[in-house]
Every structure is written in structure tokens, then in C-alpha cells.
Length: 123
Length: 212
Image 1 (cartoon, rainbow over the protein chains, first blue to last red):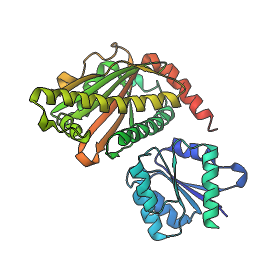
Image 2 (tube, helix red, strand yellow):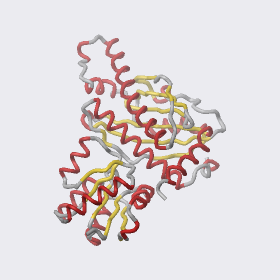
Image 3 (cartoon, chains in turn cyan, red):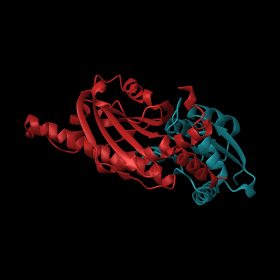
Image 4 (spheres, chains in turn cyan, red):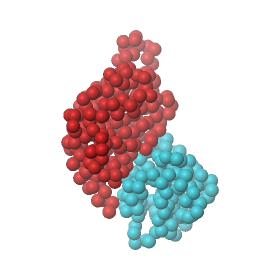
């Protein structure tokens, strides 16, 4: 069951959009980080059930952060939410272990689908 | 320049930055579908300027290139302005190769024409997809002028000096990108003036309302 969600995105607006798309009635505990490195550090501390990860970020990009999180915990559920929808970028993060890739901007429906997929994956 | 700062708020700048990020991501994906290329994206930047400072701002931004090639295209709708796609001068030949044309088969005059056509094609895709997506996200639709291509010129000569009326303000949306395979770098500047600012503020608010 998903309880804790980590949002990793350098854009506060993008994080706000993502938060608004999460079903409020489920009472998720939501954490935020503003770049890939801060996201990795937050992951180690919080151990969220699901991490939503942007790709194009300063300090450390989302691909590297995903790789580090998955190296730290091979069972980590990372869902990439990005504007970079080039096939090569998508293939790369899926190869690094991301569960799925969503294109920006997210909607309540796409986020709901992603959470259902994550729930099934967690089991 | 300070008088510009209250034209749009920091939050509006952040929303615009995110929308530009989404729009250029779409443009990069469209280009990657047409030619075998991977576009390395960066975080976009939004600047507010006095229009008189705009040409010198653009020249400073691209000053790392001694000579440049530029694709310039104007767009009209509620969102109205100009797009400038700026490459270092050598990019034309690199891009010709990416389109699969062998420039060795052409005489020097034809190579120039081929470079110009290629830059125009890349400009059409990147500018069209980026401005189109940005307009779509903000509930607008725009039309475009035919692109103007200036190849291998100094940035002093290639960038127009009177982009908007003096005394007006300008919002510049800047994205830096790199075509990995060919080590081609470039800038995309979208510039909009006073005429679009009220519409822009309203549209940014409407965009965010759906996420409240």
C-alpha cells in the first residue's frame, strides 16, 4: 500500500501541479526535493513507496538520480514525469529501472493510472 | 530595466518556465522523430527586458559563437512575437549530414543552399512545435510567417536591431540545447512584447486553475 510519495522536480510549479493530481482522499504523506541529488538524499532518509522523478534538472538529472535510487534499493518504485519525451530518453530511464514514464503536464487520470500500476507492482 | 520587473510576478515566471520546458520537450521529440538525433535539453530561462535592451541581450547570450546562423520566424495569435533559433555557423553542414544528404556531391553554391534549406527545416520543426505546444497549453492558436534564415554571419549583423518598438517591454523565453551526436549547440529564444502580456498573465492563471 502506498503511504509516502516523494516528488523530485526543480520546478515548484511542476511539484504543485503533481500534488494537485494526487488523490487527496487517500491521505498520502508527500515529500519534495528540488533536484536529483536532493531527491536521492531524501529517498534514503524517507524511503517513500513511490518517487515521481523529473529528468531535466540542475545539480543531478533525473536519470542519474533514478540510477542511484535503484542502486540503493533495487525494489524502489520510480515513476518518471518529464517534458523530455524523446524515445531515447524514455528507453534510457526504463533501462535504469523506472517503472514507467509519464509526459508533462500530468493529469489526475494519468497520475491515478500510474499509482494503480505502482500498487500492483508493490503487491 | 527595473520598471519591467513588476510586469509579471515570480510565480508567473515559474509557470511560464514550466510551460516552455514542456513545449521545447515536445519540439525536441518531434525533431528526434524526423532525424536520428538526441537533443540534450536544459532548464529554460525567462527574462524580462526593456525592448531597447533586447538586441544587445541576444547578442551577449550567443557571444560564445564568433559567427552564427539564425532562423527567425514571427508568430501571431493572442500570443504574438518572434522566435530566434541561433546556431554556431558550422551547424548548417553538421545538420545537412544528419538529414542524410552528402554535401560532397554539390558545388559550393548548392552546399550553401542545402545548408539554408536544412536550417529552415530544423527551424520549422523546433519553432513550430515549441510555439504551437506553448500556445496550445495556454489556450491559443498561432499562425507563422515564413522563416528567415541568415547563415554564417557575425551576431552583430545577424540579429535585428529593432525587434519591438522602443519603450515597450519584452519577455524572453530562452532554451539552450545540444544535438549530442554532432556536438551542435544552439539557443531558442521566444520573444513576446507588451501586446501579449495581459493575455499571457490571464492565460497563465487559467492554466493553473485546472490544478487547484
